[in-house]
Structures are given as structure tokens and as C-alpha cells.
Length: 547
View 1 (cartoon, rainbow, N blue to C red):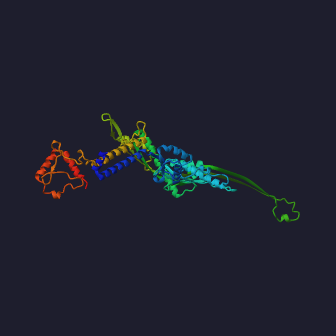
View 2 (cartoon, rainbow, N blue to C red; view 1 turned 60 degrees about the vertical axis):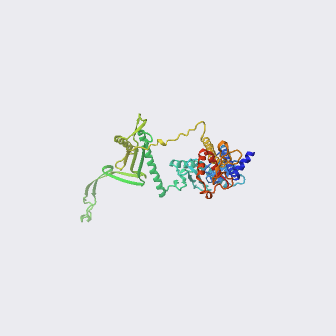
View 3 (cartoon, rainbow, N blue to C red; view 1 turned 30 degrees about the vertical axis):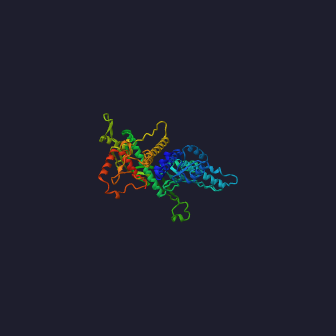
């Protein structure tokens, strides 16, 4: 205790306060390290949540006294890693998260007693919309979905029935977009879930306002028909490009050919009716031949009118008669001819190909070099490129009269072997989280070591540098001959000079200047050369003396 009191007096109040501050700072730092090490590691429970789902999850976590953290403006909830699985099971029991939409659990909270049929029908539509939205959100590129169903009721005594329809709004993840096949899949999914709904009466729109599919009511809007024509052109281009790549990869190898196709198409609908007559192709359709013959004999028995016939007794006179004969022949022939006629009614469907432009990029050959264990690049010959060009022409249905062009270019592809996937296999049965935890502990340990070596140790060493090292005198002293304390000559050179006590001024240069003689300076220099460590201790005492 006496030594401690002597040490405290030697250090002074200022140094003791500095040591206390350093001790408290070190204690606080190591307490923070202990908290960081003992703090549970948080893992993602759910992300990309709606605010309504986040509120329901937080309410459940607070009721279960589970610590949690919020990130992403409340869209991501983190809990301790060992609580993730159990919490997900408990939330799944309550159908959380539901994506902001309610499904058939809507009927669990409501009692059918006292509920009208209208309310039941509305709830049925809401539940069906919620279930479809959940199913659509299970697609990887879809972040959120809203489904609106129109299911009209059939009125009594009405023959006409309005067909149901649906509209779907999709919110995509980032810059992801749905493929045409995925759009058709969503249409058929919704159509199969709603009674009487056909897939052509479902409209899909993404979060950018792009119409992905449209209802087919029999009339084509010019704006929508233009979009359909563009889709057909892009689909044909992609189909031809895939056909070329699959064909040439059999020859040059996988991932060593790239094809781009540009198609010029005519989307005009043309109806043509053509009627042709062949004058040389006459055919007797019908013939008619009428022949008539007739003979006419005429006799005149009336006596002629004469004077003798008017006389008395004229009846006895012989009378005279007149006779005539005529014949008639008629021949009528009618022949009807049928001239051969050809009627051609041709309809040119929309989307006819007017021109094809194909560009094919082919990698060269790589010849292995056994000496260097590498491969040497060699370009393909002109004959081989011509054979590849012939294959492309046959694959696309090349037509020179149509103006089709095919270009096959041989160039070296960029080497992508350096960007191969990094092997993420772990060792000693440790997973990624274990390695992250070990790295965290190692980083905190290194930080603690650096604080001890670079902060605490220099400060403590600086504070303790002026502690007395000689026995009981309270000040470091020089050792002279025969072990006796040595003394330096004073400014006047008449006697030894002792160190001023702590608290007094060390040396007043203005008063001493010009008074130190050459002998004293020489003695001091000789002493420093013989006893450098003692001289250094005295200098440190002067530098750290309190005012």
C-alpha cells in the first residue's frame, strides 16, 4: 500500500485522471466487444413485404417476445437465426404473409348466419381474386399481382348471357420481363380457375403500363394490331436465329456461334378474285335438231257461177271441180357451247415475308499445343465458311429473288474461361454463415489487439515514464563514482546543481543565457556520453514536470 501511495504521489492528479479515463475507455470498448460477440445473429425472415404484411408480422413477433429488426423501409423483417424456422411455421399457420390480399380465409372470420347471398357472392369473388394473386406471385419474376374478376349474373327470363372477363396487373422484380409463353401460361391458369372464363378474355398489364395480352372480341384495334404484328416479327426472328444456332452448333461446337436475323414482313391483308376464260377449250353443252315435213291437198267442189246455172232446169247440167296439192319441209338445229372458265379466289394472310437478312458470327478453331498445354487459335477457311453459309441458306428458306442476304463472318470469341463460376464448396462441414461468424470474431479480436497495442499501451507507457526509479528519493538521480550520487555544476560553476523540485520552473533560458561556461558544458557532454540512460531519465523528468 505504501508503494501504491508513493506511486500515486509520484504520478500526480493529472496522470491518475488520465489513467482512469484510459481504463474506463478500455473497459467500455471491451464491453462493446462482448455485446457484439454475444449478440444473436439476425437472418432474413421475409423480404419484399407489403406494409400490411409487415404490420401483421411485427404484431405476431411482439406477442411472442421475439426480437426483430426492420430494413428496407419496413419491407424486410429480420429475426435471430435460430428463430427463423419456428417463426415461419407459426406465421404460415395464420396465412402470413398474404401479399396484401385475402384468400379463402376470408370465410373463416365471418359467420354465415345473417349474411346475405349478395355479401357471400362478393366475398367469393374477393377470395378467388386473392388466391389467384397469390398463385401468380409464386412466379419468380413477379413481385406482386392484382387480379380483378368480372363475373356477371344471369338475369331471370333473359336469353343473353354476358361472358366473364378478367384483368391482371403485374409488378415485376427489377427489370425482369415475362416471356410470351409465361403470359399465355398465366392466362390459361386464370381461365382454368374461373368457371366459364376463356383465356382470350383476360388482359395482362405490367407495372410500366405495357399491355402484355389483350381481350379478343373479334375487332382489331389499329394500335393493338400493330403491337401484335411487332410481336409476330420478333418471334419469327428469334425462331430463325435459334434454328441457325442449333444447326451450326452441331458443326462448330456449343456456344461458338451467334446468329441475328432481321425480317421484313408485310402485314397487309389482300383478297384477290381472278376469273379466266379459255377460248380454245370449247365444249358442246347441248344440241337441238328439229325437222318438219308437211303435204297439203285442197279440192274445190262448188260449181262456178255462170248464166247457165241460173236458168230453169239448170240442175241437170254437169258441174266442174278444182283440186291443188302443196308440200312443206323445215329443219331447225341449235348447238350450245360452254367456254372453259377458271375462277381463282386467293387470300394473302398477314405476315408474309418480304426479305430476310441474316448475320452469323462463328468462332474459329483451337488447335491444342501439347508442349505449352494451351490451344492455338486458327481462323476457318473460306471453303468451310461457304459450307456454313449454304447450311444457313437451307435452314431459313433462302430466296434470291426476294432479296435475302446471308453473311457468315469468322471472328475469335472473347475468352470467358476466366469468369467461370467460383467454387463455393466449404470445408470442415462449415457453411457460409459459420464462416461469416468466424470472420466476425476474428475481426473483433484483431480490433481489440490493435487497440491494446496502438492506443492503451502507448498512453500508459507515456504516463508511467516519469515514475521514480531510484530508491526512495522521489527523483531519478545520477550515479557517480563509488556509487554516490553525482551532481552537475550550477550556472555559476561554483557548486553542484540539483534538479528543481516538481512544480518549479525547470530552466529559465533568458536568465541562464550567457552565464553557462564552457567547462560546465564540457562536463555535461562527457556525462551524457558516459551515462546516456540516466541523462535520458532526467530529460524526461524535465519534460513531464507539472507547472
